Length: 302
Image (tube, rainbow, N blue to C red):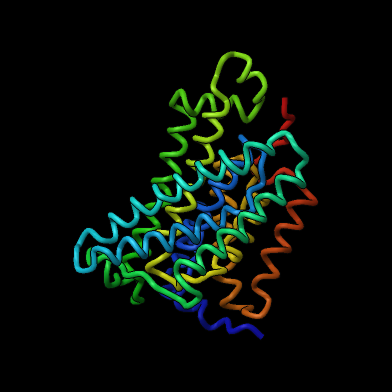
């Protein structure tokens, strides 16, 4: 039987809710890039979790170059995510561009091969042992939430998520690049006909998605262990997020991340042996009732 005594402690419930929101922000960063790439390029990128893992390793390594500096974390976060974006540009240009017009199975096989390649390269460069990053001094310590301690760094992550969501919304809704991205998502052939450099647009979109994955990895580095294989767990949950929220929908991705984050936070608390089952049950229900997701919509590609 689950222990329901924790329900009487408002401080514990508040902290648990915040833990779920923290996880939701990580899931949103990864899943938003995954959803963006699929929505525009039409590629279901299995290697997106590998970009997250690469972001964690790069940020860890860059921070180690500036040990003792108060700016080490910030420099590592910025340069690490940019580095992942550049890797994403190479991946799109070399590996994905030749298979855009092939069957979906070919695209999936290519991205799965990239998972294996990046995993082996990570093991070759950093080894198989676990590593962990350091939190910046500015965000060390904790704050009191209704009598319970909550890490200051996690509050920072909670702030980053909505800021990134707002930035993406402004980029996609208020800029020429965003208008082209939305047009390409609806009818990529027409965008090419009117003279837009579709090749460059696709590369830019993939680099943006890769940057989001790298940013998520860099933010995760100071919280948990960094290890080969960390990409598998995050990509599975990210796929669930975009399925529940709606593939290609930024708002749906955020909603899906919030739901999954809270479901994990409280599911593992009251039903630790079956928590992951609830997530899959939710996904199955959404697929049956609304296959295109809670905030998604059926898309007919031109």
